[in-house]
Length: 198
Length: 198
Image (cartoon, rainbow over all chains, first blue to last red; front, side):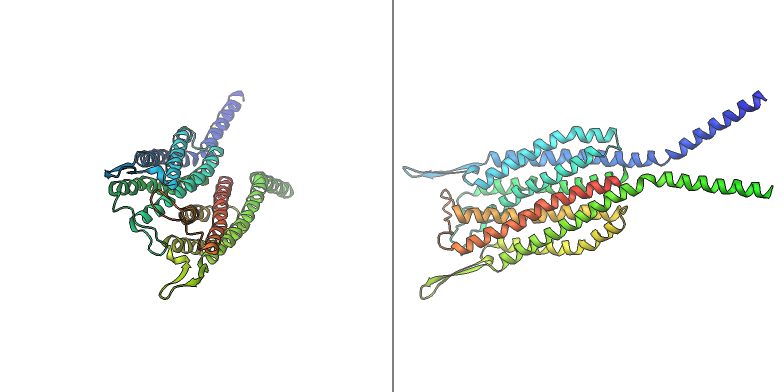
């Protein structure tokens, strides 16, 4: 009688274990997908950091002194002659600093795939940073376009004939920034995916 | 004997019902919160639509003819004298069209609070549209700033002394666009919240 009871108990314990295994059966695959998403998120953040930092440095170190000068004036162009380019440097610096600060969160998401609150926090700040970065990049693009083409209607002359290397440098530094914008859109998409699977 | 079995059956059925009630016990509150979030999402989309459409129309109808003219030239400024403003109008028009198209999805989310795939789709397109809208708004802001202040270093003169009402109109039309940018950041945050509760 006692043995029978013991056997029943063992069977119950087995059933409970089985039940647990069943309940948590779908979680490992979900966590697996989320871990993959988090790792991809980490890589994209690193790439975006490289892009924004590169852009900030490339623009921030841009200046050109023309080989001729008159008695009083030296023909020299620096990035901060145009306030928009200063904004570009500041925006890129802020975003790259944010990206570095967000990396620990990204690692935390790799380790704990089911974290939700930190993900929502990141979605919010990611979107705000995306807006800041896009603002800097496209404002600079508008000015660079003007520098290249000028505008005859309002008498703004193209300055790229004189400051050739200055123009090339500023145009080139937009690339990193716009790539980072595209990466941010992907990062937000990944966050949405991960949140839906938590 | 038969009655006993029937009673047992009824008890079982009762237990099953109780179990179901327990399982789905937390879902109604979650759905309630999600419904609230979806309704807020709908309202924000409507507001953003008004903002972007207003911006597009305000900028698209901007022109000014000065009261004096020479024999050959009439002094006239239109928004499409500056390509950036054309981009602004196009970007705002695209985004407001997108917002109208996204309203049915928003209504669908109010009705079916647990929908996930459509939410992720919207997060992706919302982010892309946020980038487009910010690009248009900030590029125009850069040009408007230049029109107001000019830039002595590169000999671009402020045109707002002559074209005063033109400048005021273009500056004002930025407001709706930048408000819509802020609304888009909120909309993405709400989508993240809703996704985490699905």
